[in-house]
Image (cartoon, rainbow, N blue to C red; front, side):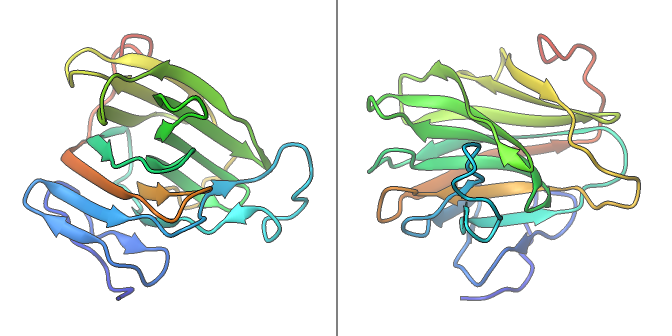
Length: 208
């Protein structure tokens, strides 16, 4: 296992792993197996009153994107084995400021698009069920606003949420990929059809 930067042809800069973990670069994207019993989540009930007490051990692969507006999208496939297994697109500033867009196994057993935004503590919001083991996820930056969208066909996008993360001009915003298995022993995750585009969304609602 290595902490060396990972070069993905579709991404404009090398990506940095959060820890030594085997990320596989494939012709069509990335593959990784989530660490057993891993997640990114700061309990909003206060049960985990510090980042160290919260579950913040999922493996990620992130980089500082070029300045300005952009979109990052991928088709995310997960071999679900346990509740909350997920493949994730991640926005990261630090352990108290981050957001994730997940393709996740819901408690009822149905795959779902789920989002979490963390400002000191995390929220948790379900978007919609997915019939299958893959879905397209996309994150975008428009000025100081971030947006999450999802699609079942890679063509028509639904807005999951738009939000801001508190940050000053000197803060580094990183974006990339994450895999998690909070209640399980790990799951295989694939990020294919990765597209990074330096552009401004015309409409946050319909994702155009």
